[in-house]
Amino acid sequence: MTAAVRLSVPVRKTVLLLHILSGVGWMGLDIGLFSMVVTALTTSDGRLAASCFVAIGVVVPVGVGLLSLLMVGSGVALGLGTHWRLLKHWWVLTKLVIGLAMTVLVFVALIPGVAQASQLATFGATGDVVRASLGQVGTSLLFPPVVSFSLLAFSAVLSVFKPWGRIVRLAPRRRP
Image 1 (tube, rainbow, N blue to C red):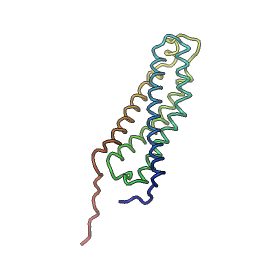
Image 2: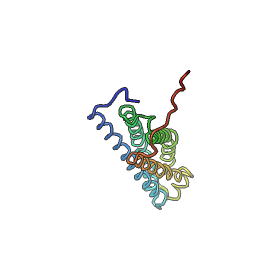
Image 3: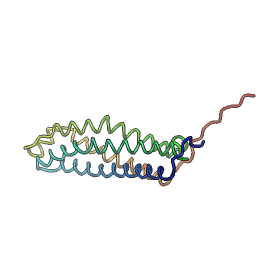
């Protein structure tokens, strides 16, 4: 199967660069998110804990939301506009499924959870009081950056090694 529309070399390289930078940027935000959540959950300074949750509420919706859409959009453009295609190789399909699932989770679970944490964080209290006001919301924010970073790293490995070969399609039966 050949691509109906092929990206020109400069456009392909630009889209590929956007794809790589959005994935790497998302990984960087994951590291920042993880460090802010750990700081907020371990400090005795209530203002610092509350500030971390408010900062997460400012950065995550715009940063992670935008980067997730850019990564998936540029990946789809590369799949449609290059010889790799979207449904021709297992590694491309796997990356597509991972990217789509992560993007949906960003908008359905992560952004609402971050918004709730930043609203519940109370200033002027000790770190213990801030954590108590958050309940499990604060602790639940530890998992998204770990899972996200791991899946993005796995996707990078797939991009480099391109395992599993082509998706086998059954040829239509010929009528006698």
